[in-house]
Image 1 (cartoon, one colour):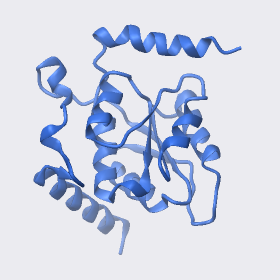
Image 2 (image 1 turned 90 degrees about the horizontal axis):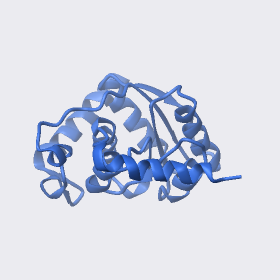
Image 3 (image 1 turned 180 degrees about the vertical axis):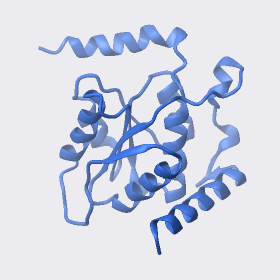
Amino acid sequence: MTEIDINKIVDAVVDKIVAEGNLDGVSLGDAPTPAAAGGGAFVKDRVRRVAIGCDHTCVSGKNGIKAYLETLGYVVTDVGCDGSEKVDYPDIAAAVARKVAGGQCERGIMLDGAGIGSSMVCNKVRGIRAALCYDIRTIVSSREHNNANVLTLGGPLHGSGELCEMARLWLETPFAGGRHWPRVNKLMATERERK
């Protein structure tokens, strides 16, 4: 099976899930849409460069997201890991966060067993606003309200189609700005208090 075949399968699965309106029990009809905030049409965010990484428990999930995003035209920088040999998620999470903080990538996605530890690590890197998301509602909120620039996911907690759809929606959802700017600025000001 070639990479093109795998991409076609992932696209078909994600399209089927979206068409059915159900992502492993998460109804898209119940989730807030990015357009709901402004009442207008959904305008996709203009992100092109994405860093992605995972620990040894999520290699297949990471590879599925990477292949799917590349079919959508994203330039994906894979910082590892690539095999089943045990690795420490803080090393990979920090590499994803540094790609974003350093400007090599506009956004980052990190997968580990639950997503919690990776979120903690990424948020230690200056300039990072990492969000652990677990459904469509938290995906949209993390972008619209918090302008998150790194997404962390618990890879084993989701099916491959759901992971792909969550990543796509997170990358496409723009920051709403407006009333959210002062809060994001306060969030970032807290980071500057560190000695």
